[in-house]
Image (cartoon, rainbow, N blue to C red; front, side, top):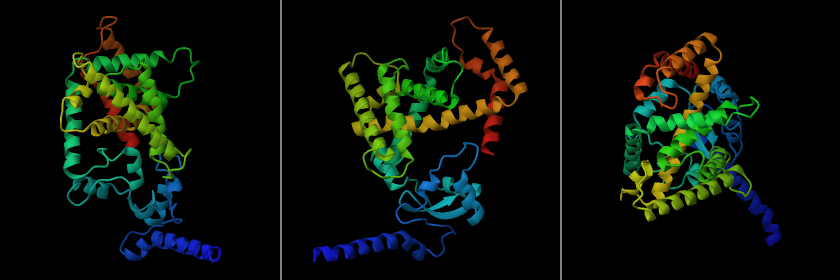
Amino acid sequence: DLVLAAPAILLALLLTLVLSHFLPLLLNPKAPRGSFGWPLVGETLRFLTPHASNTLGSFLEDHCSRYGRVFKSHLFCTPTVVSCDQELNHFILQNEERLFQCSYPRPIHGILGKSSMLVVLGEDHKRLRNLALALVTSTKLKPSYLGDIERIALHIVGSWHGKGGNITFCEEARKFAFSVIVKQVLGLSPEEPVTAMILEDFLTFMKGLISFPLRIPGTPYAKAVQARERISSTVKGIIEERRKADCCKRDDFLNVLLSTDELSDEEKVSFVLDSLLGGYETTSLMISMVVYFLGQSAQDLDLVKREHQGIRSTKAKEECLSSEDYKKMEYTQHVSKMMIIQYTL
């Protein structure tokens, strides 16, 4: 009887899967036009197809041309409305926590962790966001802030010697952004072995963060969950070392975290990971695109070089640039802004 019942059970499971996948289409007739793709998988695999950074990608281009700039889809096991409309996106962001609630698809929660600022809502989110603002403020006020950035930049550029000119700049920009954040948050230099260890796990984490949420050993998603656990363990170890060496205070944001009783250790670990995640891709992408577009204009590149050489000529050999020196880089700032505008368009 059990053998005979097995096909019926499988058929029932299959029908349940199909109905649960397409039921939102029937229950929401006023939803925008679009497609839900295949049951369970939806359109996630097409959405995740890699594409050039200066394009929307084939998935968005195809769906926008077929359904308009606002359409429905099924991504990360969740019915989804996708908006590529600038006015609607602005309206949504302006009304966050009033008409709209910011969140990530549920499978991504398993990677980010339940205490991540990107996952928590309401008062918990406000509390963590205020701490993030405190990080930015305290970091910029540090006398060593600009010097740290310059030393990290020189370290990254110095590592290019002996590579035969084969440099993947976007990867180097990611290393730079990661090193700056780790230095400001954890007080770790690029040369320290623990920095390389965190970077290796963080790269695994990033590869699985936006991947098909299949938690089977060997998949990018499963590897990302494991990588986050290793990063958490590493950061917890750093926190314990700081507590034991209470007399040796460091000038970084970890001391700010350790001095507050508002957060649990798990929230402090999540906050460190959120700090890495928040600046890693965004900062490195913008740096890469500015350099890319600047390389397309020999005239702009020459003027930027002259401006930098003129400022450097007023400094001693080992003297770091000051905030006043950066303010003098008017043409550099103008070019950077124009390159970013060109990229966003």
